[in-house]
Length: 106
Image 1 (cartoon, rainbow, N blue to C red):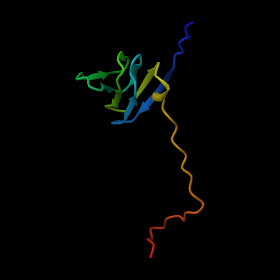
Image 2 (image 1 turned 90 degrees about the vertical axis):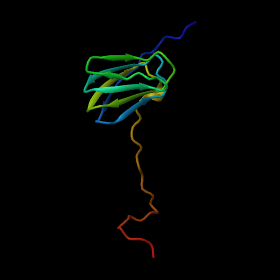
Image 3 (image 1 turned 90 degrees about the horizontal axis):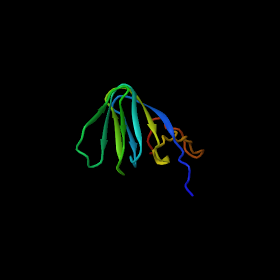
Image 4 (image 1 turned 135 degrees about the vertical axis):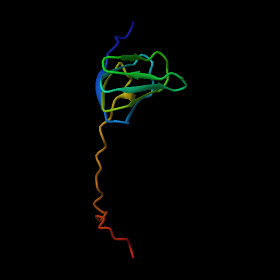
């Protein structure tokens, strides 16, 4: 019995010169919605530049890096959960640590 394929799709906003990584690009689609992005794959000599409306489809089990040449928005589809953007961790201050006032210990 086969397991139904669940499609995942999410949008990522990338500031200029930021990088979004997909650990396994097999079956992953990257679509440029705005701006311009440079897509590179590990051990692949091609330069793939996407303009708005253009799409890249990964076919091999390689890491994919998406670099924003300018502020851009991309849609990532059918990515494995490891490629999903994670929320920023909440930094909690230790109740035992004193706030830094620019002073060093004596």
